[in-house]
Image 1 (cartoon, one colour):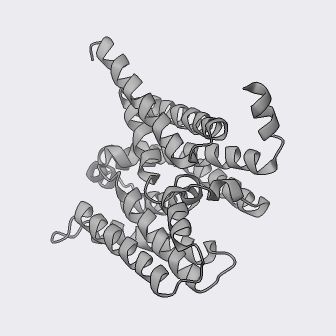
Image 2 (cartoon, helix red, strand yellow):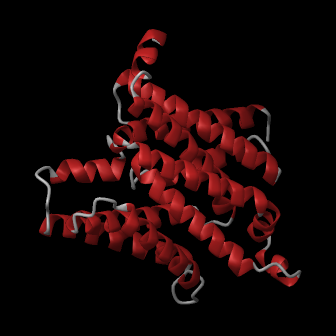
Length: 278
């Protein structure tokens, strides 16, 4: 097995996949704890489907760099979801559902009507489940991921106390002078960037798993926000690395394998929590 791994890691695309996978897992886990505690975890689904619709439009326009359209569109939608989700008539979960289903349906419809590919079903499957795209990364895409991931981690560390405050008691944070709207906006933009990056790793249908499972697993083991955040990051990185390695050795889809490893880790954390009697 070690010889087989050594053989595969001779190829740059395998190393690129591992680097990008670990970075995306780290970033998604950091914000995942906040999103789960704010009961806004399924924003990943909504934004990922928006990204899918944007990718469909970019494909129709034959853009060589789809990130130019996909990233701004997803960020704008994250801001819109943040503001309209507080509307008394359309709450956050309902708005996410509307955007999620609408963007997914329109994206697939456009891809069918204005198809520019001879293998439409394969392209759709790759976009939805991240089947092969993580293994076709270019050097420039890897550098974009590294830079954006570094920015997200730096922002999270720099504004950790503010993010902690708006996560647990937004009203109190506002009362003591914290600009809660700004930090909520920053969180929304950061998660939008992560969603776009994660499209290549697990696809649009599985992105929420990277956000939810590590956070839930960590919450079964620790109670404080800092401990849960650190544990979530460690679990997410390990699961991503193990999932990618298993997918290489067993020739299974990368995204689905990573999610499966996260599910196993969640089950283990639940068992440990039960044994501890908590």
